Image (cartoon, rainbow, N blue to C red; front, side):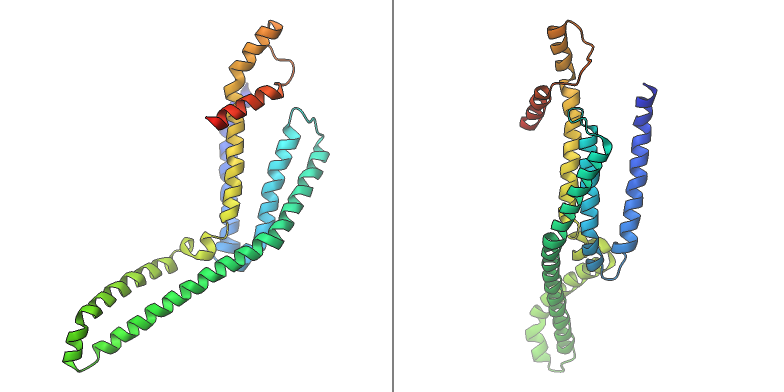
Length: 231
């Protein structure tokens, strides 16, 4: 009981420390780089591999039905991690590079158009012909307003690393993957909580006692998982 209560406090503290360390590593070696695209793409297979390794090893080693020794679970986790890392390197990385590069090119074209618009506005302001100025007054006003708005947005994007396309989209698929594992972990915990009373009722009905000497039947876990998914 003491170890269970202690885990309630130790687990979130350790999770927070690990999260901060991971963020600092990513910030130093990727996010703070002048051009974070290539360092990020190089790191993607490694990050995917680590995520897969941790989750697969935890699932196989802690599964009460497989009874897998730690070194077999380790070998399986490493093999799957290397496989996923190879898939990411040969398929995901080229796709990410192409997508992000195209968006960067479009952003550069947009900034070039803004520069041309500002140059034209400055040129028109220096024209001595008052009739020309009078005829262009309304359109210039609109162009100036639009130009300033877009310039402000561009300046904000330049000041914030989080708004860079290569930063905001680099870990998109990885975030989806970690979200799936997070949902899986929470779902597994919810299934355990939900079917606890059901298991106790089954034990009392079948064995006349609520003490559980063996693992929970797999079909009961399946029933709980399907119920939560449908709900």
